[in-house]
Image 1 (cartoon, helix red, strand yellow):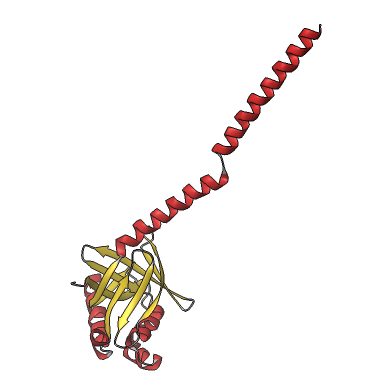
Image 2 (cartoon, one colour; image 1 turned 60 degrees about the horizontal axis):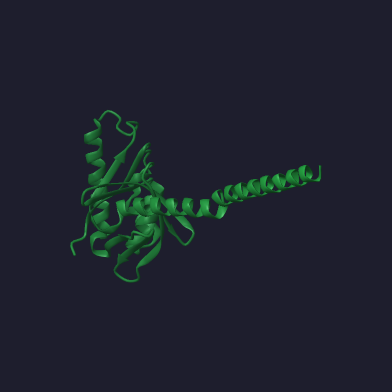
Length: 204
């Protein structure tokens, strides 16, 4: 009788030990720290991969117009309307002396941007969303969101008109009123249209 009781206790202890070991292995396998470390690494790698799509040193080439819809076209065809808008932008950019004032724009592979201009450069962080084709430049707590896409050694970046005015004010070094006066034609109702810059990779 005592032998049977001892055998049962011994078997119970072994079973509990095995379950505890199994539970310990399970807890270790699902260790939140390990899971989150892997997840954080994956997110970080995804960010770096996205940043590399737009990373580089870019120089202004010419105006760029991105039209999502046709509401701004009116009686003109979209190519003609975009051409007229580009001519207006080109005239304004020359008046603001963008090519002389703005040397280049640098986007690093670790999420930092720098506008290299005559005088003190501007710096900040950026966020790039390839799925939405959005690039958000962060400067002094102010986000400047733009549409962006890359095609080989070309980078196209376009803003809503109000954001473009802010960006042009930054890179021109001129007063807001001077910038606004040069781009006053943008006060027209250009719905579903973003305007900005066609940029080319800088030659090293």
